[in-house]
Amino acid sequence: MLVLTRRSNQSIMIGDDIEVSVLSIMGDKVRLGIDAPTSVPVFRTEIYLEIQDQQADRDIAKGGADDTAVTGGVATGVEDAASAKDGH
Image (cartoon, rainbow, N blue to C red):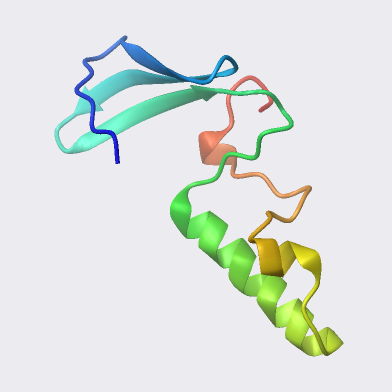
């Protein structure tokens, strides 16, 4: 894991297309802004895990696993509004 120190209004780049910015720091809370292509799903970890659990439950109900559950892919069409920025 790469660990970085950033201050408010500073950012990091992930590849050429993803920018993570520190918007504000209030006590023990850090507000992040994520600018990523709409083709890159962005979720808070607890939401991502919930989506994976729901996908696994659907696969069990269907009687088997599909490629999404096996490869750890994310169900499309579900976005976390708290992490969305400018429609991403």
